[in-house]
Amino acid sequence: MPEKLTLAILGGSGLYSMTGLTETTEYKLETPFGKPSAPIVVGTLEGKRVAFLARHGIGHHLMPTEVPYRANIFALKALGAERIVSINACGSLREDYAPGEIVIPDQLFDNTKGRTLTFFGKGLVAHVGVAEPFCSDLSAALETAATGTGAKVHLGGALIVIEGPRFSTKAESNIYRSWGMSIVGMTTVPEAFLAREAEMCYSVMAHVTDYDVWHVNEAPVTVEMVIKTLNKNTQAAQAAIRKLVTSLPEESVCVCGSALASAIITHPSAIPPATRRKLDLLVKKYIAAPSKIS
Image (cartoon, rainbow, N blue to C red; front, side, top):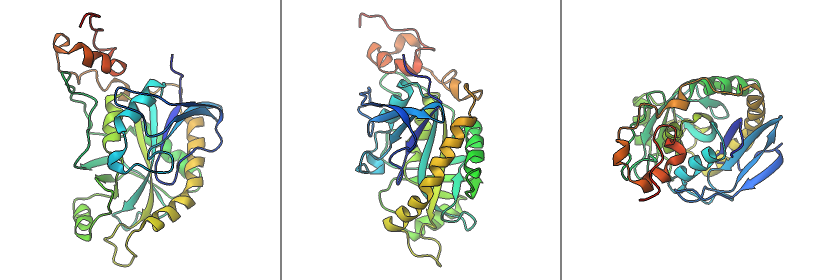
């Protein structure tokens, strides 16, 4: 049986481990969607069991497009996680969201081009609702925890996710601003959508590293600039997570945990047994197990 985990943390650029974890176990899992980005470390933090996964792999060797998003979310689900906080770097598209500050977005715009966005397919179709792509309960708790560290935190804003790995052109950056986007990043899609399909709460702590390239009074974004700001923010991110795990209730009361209840459209008799077995972790409470004879 999987553990009862209070939280799973997806560490992004600049956050490759979680300090303060004790009683740790490292899991090297194989999922129906391949291996996760890195071994998952489960340990005790402030008396609560949490999981940590480095999204870009050990040594940051995976580009945003190369991250095995489905394997990552599936593996965290298999280990017993019900809530995920994603730590991301982002560029600001607003004057009032300054480098060094934290944004907890409430909306998401998918501008990626080459990613698999769902666990479903191959005979099993589900149309999950993502009008509100982030868990509002988890985001509110995350804001309180992050603010408690003394950081400047903004709750709300639209995050546009681009394919990467390159940064935006000035024309693109200005278009995103004209669309009403607040921040730009490269990894929240398809994570947020997959977490919803897996009926997990998902929220983002986005660290503003730069003003993208639209801001004429600032130098163009570089990797050096991003890492310098992230290194300063790592302590705040770790402190916010420690505060968060102590404040979260044992059980979620939001609707994330029943996202598939009205999403599966395929009749059970039409689902190939192999597909049913592959997605058993996600759909078993809604669809009866297939016959052993396939």
